[in-house]
Structures are given as structure tokens and as C-alpha cells.
Length: 239
Image (cartoon, rainbow, N blue to C red; front, side, top):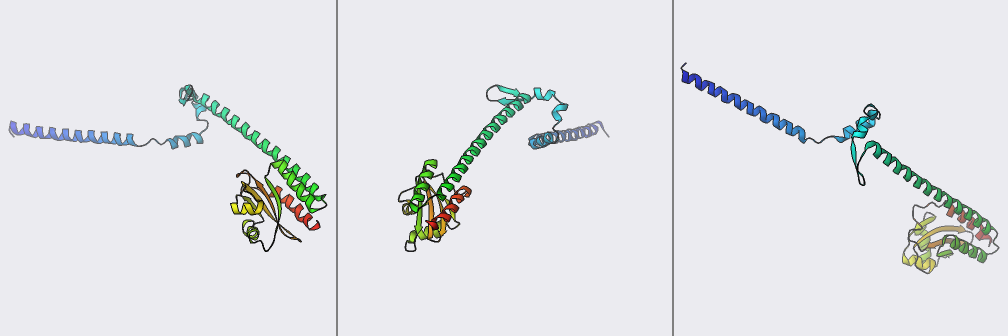
């Protein structure tokens, strides 16, 4: 083999080695790039910390080293952030407890009112006295706009339709049409509570209306309303 041939072979081998090196470099760069492009799975860290609540006990320096954004102070430590969250949670719980206590107080007052009203209704001697007591008491206590006892007669098809369709489950709470409001109360109303009274004297609708469209809602409990209903069903046949 002459000198020129040897140099040619060496040159070709060098080119091959250089090509392999370039390919390897490109593959490594692509691999690093692809690995870097993969999204960091924060959920795995979250699950790990939840499964290992003593993690920061083992590495307490992280609590002070790690910083989280704060809209007033720029950044705070995890300890400070945790204290802030706990303070906010305590304040929220205090508000919820206060709200529940107010609701309980209001419900107790309604129960006491209902109990007194029912006993007073039992003392009525005629229908006029009962109607007046019922209307005055409910309007004064709850600021209702209308309180009525309405007899349903066969000839009155509109009332009969309300009886059959609107109050088909014995109670109805919510909005009604203008036509129904005119027939029941002679005026437009916001929301209503309706119930059916079947007595020996015929069919009667016990109707209450509020100017507030949101006062009576379909999801309302009928318990307190049903107490008055039972007393009325008991008293009306006797008057």
C-alpha cells in the first residue's frame, strides 16, 4: 500500500468518526431537549407531600427557604403563609357559626310564633274572627302582602285549575302567573305559598303572598306551614 492510499483511508475513517460523533451529539441534544420539554408533574409532588405530612419535619429549613407570592408583602415563607391561611379559615368558621346561630335564633322565633298562632286559632268562635286573626298575625310577623282562605267552587274553572295543577302535591312555593295572582289575590305578587285544605265544607286554598320574588322558593320546607294547615283543617268545619 502506497503512502497516498494510506492517507486516503485514514481520511475516510476520520470522516466516519466525525459523522458518528456529530450524530451522537445531535441525538444527545434532542434527548435532552425532549426531556426538558416534558411538563413537570406537580401532582406527583402534591400527592407525595400529602402522603408524607412529616416531610417538612425532616427538612425544616425548607419552610423558611421556600417563598410564596403575597399580594401585600411581596413574598412570605411557607410558615407565614400557613399561619395566614389558618387565620383566614378561623375567621371564615367564625362567620359561618355566627350565621348558623342567627338562623337557629330566627327558626326558634318562627316556631314560637307558629305555636302561639295555632293556639289562638283554636280559640276563634267564627270564620270572620279566624280570617282576621290569621291575616293580621302573618302580615305583622313576616310582612306578607296577602293572606287569604279561598273557597274553590266547581263553577270557578280557574281556581279549580290552580287547585288541580299548581297545588297538586298539597303545597306550592314559588312564582305564579299574573293571571293566577289576579285570581287568588286580586293583585300582582312576588312569590307565594299555597296549600290545599279539604274540609267538610268543600275545597279551600290557604294562600300567602310576598312582594319579594325570592321569599318563597320550591325547595322550602313545609313543616312550619303544615302546622297552621292542620289547625285550619280542624277548625274550618266547626265554624
